[in-house]
Image (cartoon, rainbow, N blue to C red):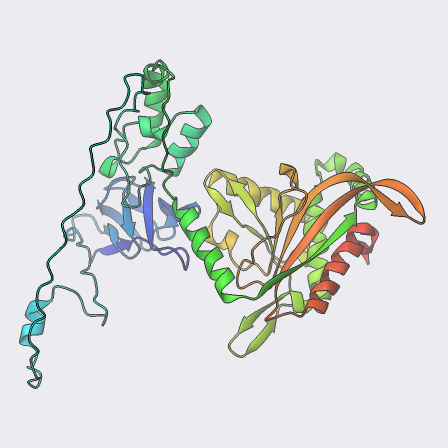
Length: 440
């Protein structure tokens, strides 16, 4: 009997997915565990494996189609086997969990005891809609609109695959100008390539005139998820913070020395790699900062999984360096560079973003001196890192110039007290100012 391949649920927050690419065609043989499709989640594009061995009997939807998790999207069986009928979407459930529109089933159920019937409420007349004057006609010099080719999702986002969006951004092509050939008008990578070869010149030739107007930027899936999680973070935690300035002179000298040592191996340790190692060690030494709230009490981790906030074309994601406390600096460097590259290419797997016990958010490269980050639940702490800059400081009665960096630790006061949070931040500062202590 044929087995249905369902749109997978690849994360707790995932409600629907997009079929970016079929890796098998109808009639192809497939093994259990072999890659069958590329599916776009809220934060990445993931290769999904076949749940069974056999032949691809039917691909129910084209590339670019968006479907809820649990929807059958393909059928796998034996050659010559009957192909299951195209799946239908399940009826929406009402507030009691019963399928809506099930009047026949309701009619066949035993009648409930008669109840007093209330008279219907009198109809309330609907007020007439206000009449507004028609807007003035746009002036003749208005910038010509892009071709009305792009299809929109119910949320107002342009229907497009991640590869199409990345290629359009690379070539500077507005997606709204590209006509999609995928399901429901979704823009595919091939559509962007065709536009780049033929249609871009015509679009660019349009007169660059403009009138005052507002632009609506549809919220992407990742933006909606980020907004929801940040709101939940502020609503469910007692967030406060500590700040401290750190003298980075010794760390810069330490980094220069170890990079000379690893130069022949092609390894280059970054400031972020050192921050990851320092925070991992500090978390083990201060377990109260490496904890989370549970119904049976506060649970303390005996390992440090450090999340690194990464800015990508599709929004903010947080890949996690697992067990950073037992990794060497070259290992941390290799792991973080791979995760950051996957994040920016949209190749992160759900496992790459799960299991974090602490997060580092670094905006120093954008010239930000200091800022306050919002917790990434269920983690207890997040460290905001500002830029490194030369500043005048007092040192042993002398005025000197030192490379200084500001750190801001946001923490959940439900889980950790201010003194414990201060001790953790002091440990981080001590390790950055005395990096040789990493070896102890």
